Image 1 (cartoon, rainbow, N blue to C red):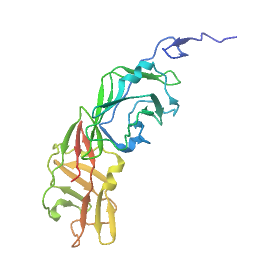
Image 2: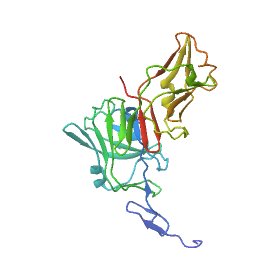
Image 3: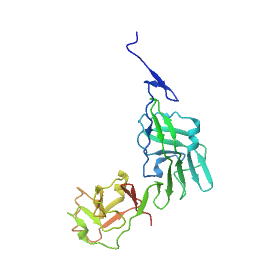
Image 4: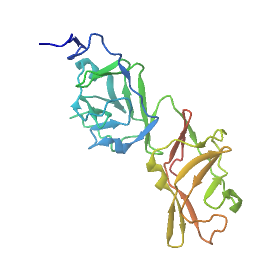
Length: 256
């Protein structure tokens, strides 16, 4: 005996429960990502959002979808061989291509064409309605999305202890940031270890990165460091390439 009505609908790759096709989920792309996203050089786990985390590996798609995913490096063009989902991340393989995403060249471009359509084993479809590109910037070691405005942070020659508020935060009189006094900026947690204070044998790592009055502001909460009373020889370091985002603007501290 079947209790009630049971319906299945074909979504192009499988028969899934229901009587109406679900709307495809739009893939959300990051502003930038590092070369660490490339596994063994021939596959890239793009830190995209929107995908269900099944770690199911191979997604379902029409073979024509592969031609929408390419890498261009100089005069060479490489086309994806597989599209996976790994840990909720859209993952593109370039097996046997010879391309090494862990050692890219400046200006290499990863492209994902419009109308990419893939689905997982639960019948959920994911799409890319508009084409997106990521260009490798060798100065800062990042793949930067094509529609993101990149602004270089300009650092002062010197600043004094008055830049330190309450001793544990420093508002560096940098330029290049939009003045929104928005407080917390958006950044990957891996950015924090790039901002440190060395005082004698002690090293303090930033806990937060803010924008205050258009100034890049580093917090060292709970560190015990007091920037209003520094010791001769203390060193504040910002290693390349930290990136912070505010409303579609990406701020980069380049190498050199």
